[in-house]
Structure formats: structure tokens, C-alpha cells
Image (tube, rainbow, N blue to C red):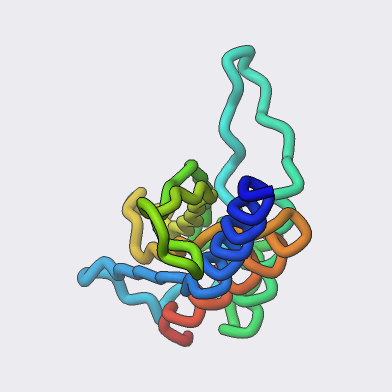
Length: 167
């Protein structure tokens, strides 16, 4: 019975940890880049597998690209169609297991250890003429359940692109 109580308070603590987390955003601009000159973009070609074939598009790819496309449209950037893009975009995502320590509401004994997933999303804007990153943004947060991940991706993309200077 005690382990059931400890387990349920541990779950409550983990939920509280996730609820209290706030997404952190970091952006950087290449000081030599004039971001106002960029009007069109395209996604960089997908990575190639060891067999030389392009990596198939994943659900994550589709979610990130759709969110970025929507946010860039709000900023006035449009996909390059039939002409070379002024910007190439690429993203990377990563997740890792992390630990937090905390006490249950009764504060008896040593702190409890709670495991959770920490995720990050990085978006890079590359000038294809110079092959230099002109703007990049990274969002990091606790990854919530699978159903909420699409909302977190949209929020991360919104916060990163919001830092991109308007054109």
C-alpha cells in the first residue's frame, strides 16, 4: 500500500514538474546578415541514408515543416516556386531522458527521483549563396505526452519564428 501511495504521489509530482516547466527559447542572428532582404525560402534537401537514398519524411518532419510554413507566411516569407530560394531552412530535433528530484507532500525520507523527457527543436535559416546560417533558433522543454507533442511543436516554432525580424 505504501508503494502505491508513493507511486501515485510520484506521478503527481511528475505531472506538476511538467506543468511548471516553461519552454526556453534562444535565437541568434548573424550580425552581417540583412534579414530584410530575404523574401523566399525552401526546405534544404533531406539527409541521405547510408544507401544513398533520401531519408523518408517522418510525421515530425511534416509537423515541423507545416508549423514553420504557417509562421513564415505570417511574416511575409513565401516558398520559392520555380526560382532559387533566397533562404534554405533545416531543422533538427533531439530528446533525452532527464531526472528531477523532489519530495512528496509528506517530506519524509530522501527526495524522490522522477524521470522525464527533455526535448529541443532547432531551426536554421541558411543563405544558399554563402552557405552561412543567418538566423537560428532553439526551443527546449519537457516533452509531454504524445497527444500534446503537436501543440508543443507549434508553440516552439511560433516562439522561434516570432523572434525572426519581420520583412
